[in-house]
Structures are given as C-alpha cells and as structure tokens.
Length: 302
Image (tube, rainbow, N blue to C red; front, side, top):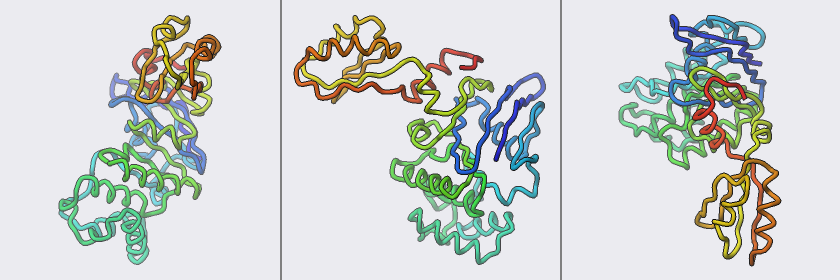
C-alpha cells in the first residue's frame, strides 16, 4: 500500500503542495490530476523519495521510501529523458542494471515489450533515430522493465495517436490485474475516467476534489440528459427551469441540468415529440467536473 498522509511541501514561502492525502492499494489505478503547475510532479518526486515533505509523510508498504525500494518502482517522467546517442538495447541494459536485473532477464523482457509495442526493428537503433512517438514507447518500456509493484506515470499518453494510446492503456490495465499500484497524471481525462477507481484533482497545490471517482460523479448534482427525437424545439427546453445549457450535436441533443429534479420536466416535454429514440440521464463527465472545479472553486475541498 502507498499512503500519502497530510503532505505539504514548501519552497521557501511558496507552498507547492498543501495538505494532500490519498491511499493506493495493490491492484488500483489512481489518477492525480491538475493543470500545469498544480503540484503533480512535485508529489511524484515526494513519493519517489526525491523530495522530502515539509509536513506529513509518504509511506510505501508501511515505511518511508528508501533506496532499497527502488527496484520495485517504475517511474516515467513527463519530459523525455533518454540518452539519444545510445541504442534502444544499450539504454535498456543501462536502466535494467540500475534495477539489479541480470542481462539475460533484461534482454528477454526487452524482446517481449518491443514486440508488444510493434517496434522490434528498433532494438539496435539509436534513440535519436526514432520518432517522438516511438521514443515515448521506449521510455515507457524503461519504466516497466523491472515489473514494478509501484508504477508512476507522468503524462504517459503525451504525443501519442489514439491507437498507441489504447496500447499504453492496455498495458496499464495488465499491470493493474497483476496487482501493481499505479499512479498517473494525464490531461486526456477520458482515459482517466475509463480505468481510474480513485482520483485527486489539484489546483495550485490544493486538493479540491479527492475520492472514489464514481462517488464523486454521483455526488455532483449536475447531470446531462441526452435526447434523440424529431422536431425538438431547443428554445422550449432552454426555458425549462433548471436547464443550464442545450446543445444540438450531430446525432443527438445534449441538455445540461442543475440536478435530477429537472429530469421529469424535460421528460414531460420530450414525450410529446415524435419518434423518441433515446432519453438518457448521464452522470457528468470527469472533464466537466474538472473544468468547473479548477476554473471556479479555488482552494476549496468538495
């Protein structure tokens, strides 16, 4: 188990992270979210033991992270940190030996991951000869080569096309199924929503939302109603009390409402329409909660 307990980190008088707490259990995927400069990378560095909290504590399996734990941890930083004049094979041997792996184990695992990521032909290529997307794959493999029990991923999907993003996501889910603890940040909130059980959203170092993702969405009063029907009068819906916004999309109509109490009033109108093919009430998307919270509720827990 990884526990971050009432952590604060200061640089002089500047508070980079303030009173942050969360727990990640084996087999859980945890999303640490926020805008640029919110304190995500600083938090990762505290978890890794690279920075010491000014207050609070970070414990891994019941103790403070130390050098002896590094063989069980994988860390992929947001910025590319590969030595570009080295070959893929040599850089993997370098990182693998840092994790005390034997050469034959490293090469066996490297061959597997190169095949998994469809880049087998780049094994003896120098990093600088690879595209940015393929460099991202190699950096990801570096974080996986030791089969980590704790995997920390800082913007792993950055610069990837949808196909490779799905590939990365499938690998993350594989490690989850094996019982690894996974923490990651990403601006691609749809993927966070797909496989994170718990999230914390930081705003200028303050945790403004934290907890089980489904419970966060359920406790958030606003809802979305999706309608497919003929001859919808958008003005009629807009004038219903409690309707925030109505958007005519390519294949349906999206109605944002203040709470569940508004649903029946919208349904009363929709049932008068012809050929109603869909009337569905949806929980808000994580992206909606993120934008409204970070944009409108500063330094305030929800």
